[in-house]
Length: 445
Ligand code: S3P
Image (cartoon, rainbow, N blue to C red; front, top):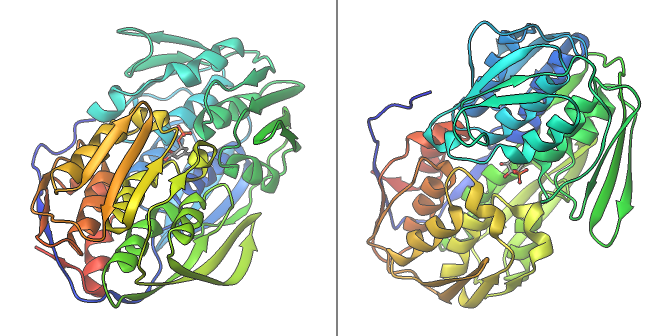
C-alpha cells in the first residue's frame, strides 16, 4: 500500500537526435482485462506481451487472491487458469491495487457479481480518487460497499451480490472503467445488462469479452455515443491474447522524437484502436510526421508500425468530444503544444482532475515552472506555443507516472535542463522508460 518514501529525482537535458526502433511495453488496459477475463473463464488462457508494470502485477495478484491460477511462463508471457463466471473465492487479505484506478474499478465489477466480500485498497494517490462512480451502478446490481470515511474512497469493503441483477445504466461520464465494471458484474447476472455512454470510451472490454465467448452487441447512440448490451451468464472459455504495444506509452518517445531536431524513430506493434488514437490525430493536425504502416490485428485490436520524424508543429484547437480517445495523453500533448508555434486550446478536460493526480493543475504547473505561458479556463487548457521552451524548472510529479515522463520528454528539447522530483512511479506503467530513452539518445542524469 505504501510506496517507497525514497524519491528518485532525475534531470533531462537537451539531447541529440533520437534515432532507432523500439517496442514500448504492452497495453495497460488490455493487460488488466486479459488477466481478469482469463480468471473468469473456464480453462487456460495464454497471454503474451503482458505489461509487467506494477499496476498490472497488482491485478495479477488480486486474481490469484480470488482463486485463479496466474503464472509467469516467460518474458511477458503469462498463463491463467480461470474459475468461471461468478467463481471467485473470498480473499484472505485486502486486495491492494497500488496506484491503479483501472485495476481497482474493474475488479470491483468482477467481485460485485460474486457472493463474496473483499477489501479494496491502494496507495495514497488511489485512496484520494473517487470510487462512487463505479460503486453506484454496482449497488443497483445488488453489491454493497461498506466503507469508512465518506463512502466513496478506499479502503473499502465490497460485498458482492448473491443474485446480481441485470441493469440498464447510463454512465454519467465517458469512462471505460465505469462501463467495464458494470459489464464485468453483468457477466454473473441473468438476462441482459446494458451500458449507454454519451461519448464512446475505449472498447477493449467489449472486444475481449467477445474474444472469450460472451454475447455482446454494440450499437450507436446519438452523435458520439454507444449502447452496449451483454447477455449474462455466458460460459467464457480460455483464450489466447496477444497484447499490442500501448499507444499511451508510445506517446512519450513519439512526442520526444517530434520535438528533438533530427529525430527519426520507429515504434512497432502500436495499438491503433480508433478509441485510443486521438493524440495521433491531433499531432497530425499540428503538422507532425507520423507514418503508419503494416496494419494488422489480433483479437479485434488493430496495431501498426509508426515512423515518427522531428517536425515543426503549430497550435490547434482540440475538441472536447475527442477527450475520451486521448484522455491519458493531454500531459504529453501539452508538451508538444509548448514547442509548437501558436496557441493550442484543449477543451473539456474535467476528467483530468480525477486521475492519478489533478492532471489539469499539474500540467499547467509543469509548463509554468519551465517558462511556458499556460492558462486553465474552466475545464480548458490553453498553451501558448513559442517554438521553444526555456526549461530550467523542477517539476512536482504528485505520484503520477505520466507527469514524470512528460517532464522528462520536455527537457530533451528545452533550452535548459528540466528536473523531476521523483521518477519512481514510472514503474507502474513503463518500467523500462529511462533505459529505453537513453538507448535512443536521451540524456538523463
Ligand atoms: C482506462 C480508462 C481510462 C484511462 C485509464 C485506463 C481503462 O480511465 O484514463 O488510464 O483501461 O479502462 P477512465 O475510464 O476513468 O476515463
